[in-house]
Amino acid sequence: MKKHDLVYLTEDASHDAAIDLINEEAFGPGRFARAAARIREQGPHDLSLSFVCADDGETIASVRMTPVLAGSIKGHLLGPLAVRPSHKNRGIGRELVRIAVEAARRKGSQCVILVGDPPYYQPLGFEKVAYGALTFPGPVDFNRVLVVPMTEDVHAGLKGDIHWRA
Image 1 (spheres, rainbow, N blue to C red):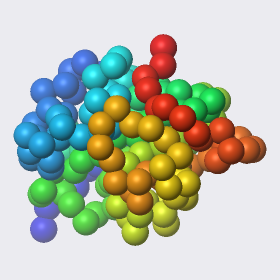
Image 2: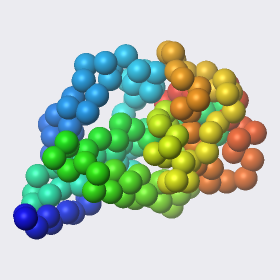
Image 3: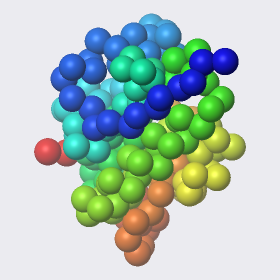
Image 4: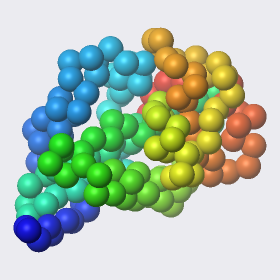
């Protein structure tokens, strides 16, 4: 059995090609049609809050964080989160989420929002956002809109448009 030497790193430009491949494997061409992708197209993600996991020097997983204004709340949109098929079910994705959420908390983000699978993300501290409270720039399943609130009254402020913020 191969020993894995996993290292978690802050994303930089040298990871771009590997991240593109990982996301293509995980989500296919349909990834560009998602509502969250419409937000990501509005501006760059925050490299200081985006992370990769490398195994023996090969980038095998990544998570990105995009600054957003969600209603009146200044937060970050988590995603895409993806792990190469060869490394799935080892806790790598959960660790990347933990690292990214804690980095956003330290940076003063009011919340981390995502569109994802509640059974996966709720044990990681995510809560459901009120159904239909946020208006996305495209169709979204409101049952999958989740948030980690980091300041008081976050849920009260999550009403209105969600879009990229400088």
